[in-house]
Length: 268
Image 1 (cartoon, helix red, strand yellow):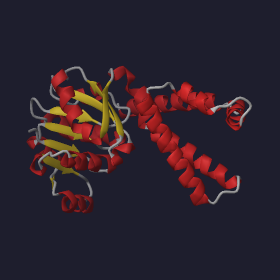
Image 2 (cartoon, helix red, strand yellow):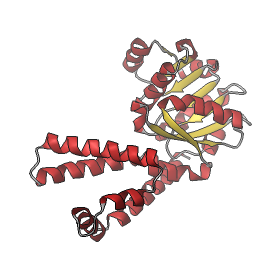
Image 3 (tube, one colour):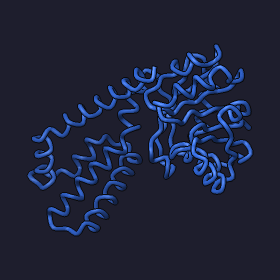
Image 4 (tube, one colour):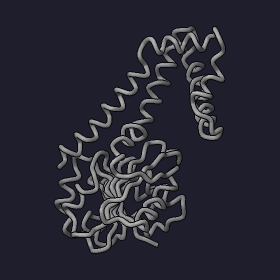
């Protein structure tokens, strides 16, 4: 069993730790770090995980998960990179930062795996994309999958696709929450109480997502099944098209991808 150190116990870092514990990872094989002493004390009490200094954690770990904000990664790697023991696997969940960003601070040949997950990890429904850096092997990818599988589904993608993954699924939950918020407001406009509108839309969203996942049907097919000739749904779809909603989504995801690339440039 590998010893895993999570550097940065924010929301995603905590979610990874709790997921590993639920999956049966021994607590003595989990280490963590955080700049805030009160946060470390809170999570130690909650999970029993040891909190150490960054250097102590790196020295003891077989796998080091970098879970700090992208803007903090350079400072962390300048401090710790040269001290990483040979054979340690580095797993980055820093949005926008390519594996070669970390490689420049690490001893030659250190394997790096780049990961993008999303906030449904909090309810074990994450979509996690995993990519190999230059020195990462199939064994390293499999180990990264073992780490993130308790949080939901995992998928291997070429690293060249990770900025698109960040835009689509990394940021994706925010788009759905934004849409649900707008639909609740529309329900209120149509005369429904807020809680009624909320419950109607949330369950509709859950049911629709399950249909997409389990039916194997293309979303166009599922949409057409709801869209009767000259009915209410086609009238709504026409208005969405008139307002350029599809084009707005395309532009929004391009903007998110471009921002991921900017983060890499600013950190480099």
